[in-house]
Length: 137
Image: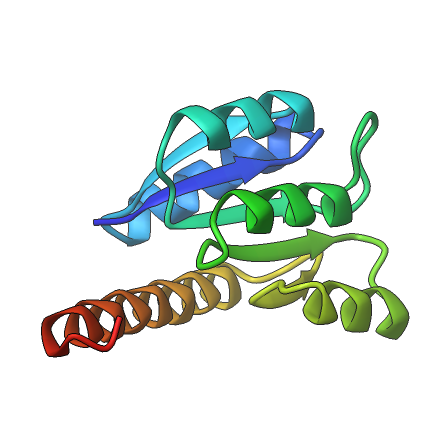
């Protein structure tokens, strides 16, 4: 079971994400509509995945992506946005986002993206463990 931090200034979107993820996966979702609070949560708690809106007041998704990556380089970030463009998708991926999804999205689309991210996170974790056991870490 993974821990997911969902960050979006729209409370309806947070509720929808929580219902979809917790209803169709065994992952736990913690939500906040305040990206500044999200940075505090990232400092205090361990998450496997961050799902962040791109456009938010106070701090946008790109800034939150940078904060998340600075705290844990292996932390995966899924960027969601209603204002998708090729440029913002390329920027997000180049800054380390695992995936980029435009709103509105289908339930299957977000569940598949989360599943893919969690599988990747587990592979990275197993790889690190193996390297440590072999003395190469």
